[in-house]
Length: 365
Ligand code: 9MR
Image 1 (cartoon, helix red, strand yellow):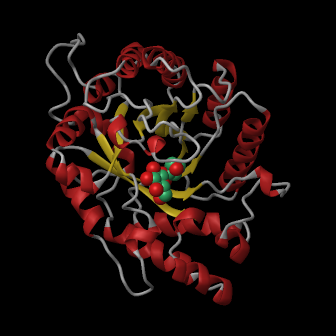
Image 2: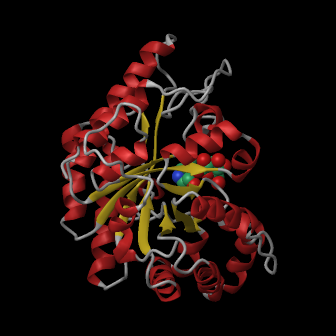
Image 3: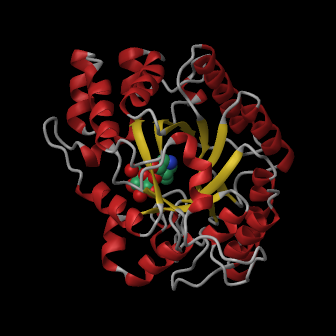
């Protein structure tokens, strides 16, 4: 499917299998249908291995998701493990799957301090060669030109705890080699390689009602303002949306204000990696599911009340494969799975799915 930047919003509304004849929502209708009915999108992060090996997983992804993103396979450590070795097979497999199922696909992520292969980290310290940044973007974005509708060009460039006044992440090979300019270089290069793809800056921990999250919001807004004032080709902000139900306070007002601030810069917004960590919650998983659903509802209600928010992707779709169950900060010590995604381990819809449906259904068109 060849979909340009300007076609992005129109494109998912036009996907043939998405729209039923009736304008009235059916209770069994999947998220992608609910979303497109309201000119929004729903999608999910996927992994090739699971797509290849688990039919039930494949079915849920095909039924529910209007857009896919690779959870790991489009990162540089996978795509370019050695200087002269590129491995496109996994990304190609996901793209083929998406195209076969009339799903869009987005790219995540071109520049991320945590996805650099070892050879690159070693080389850039010595050479400071900008080609190590631009050559990669030209190769990857060029290869998938007109096939991915958007790219997270730069991911997580903010880290106020690193101590810079700008709040930029100092502990990144990119910042150390080029200073802040690597961000604009990356965007210019991506735009030249695929003029049709929407270009995103993607950032984490932007929604908490806590001081450290506020610092992140301020630094992100300032960065976006600087980029826009320099005519850097950026189209949207990706808000990851990894919520922590029992650990980080969330407030509708704070989140709403931030969305308005971003929209006032003329940017679109996508919730790119939504899930809700349930670590630290009560033992009773029924109670946790209710809490996760309630937070999901509040968060997405605020998001979808804004015309600038074009949709939401969850980071995975089933608890069976969630990164939250693997991560040392969020996994349960007794080995039970986390319950932060719309489907449980057995691929059954959870209250979180109902909350998402309801948020999409309420979205003003
Ligand atoms: O969920 C992803 C996990 O499986 C990978 O091991 C990890 C490193 O590549 O990345 C995780 O995804 C991260 C995403 O790329 C950026 N935002 C935070 C996500 C969770 O750590």
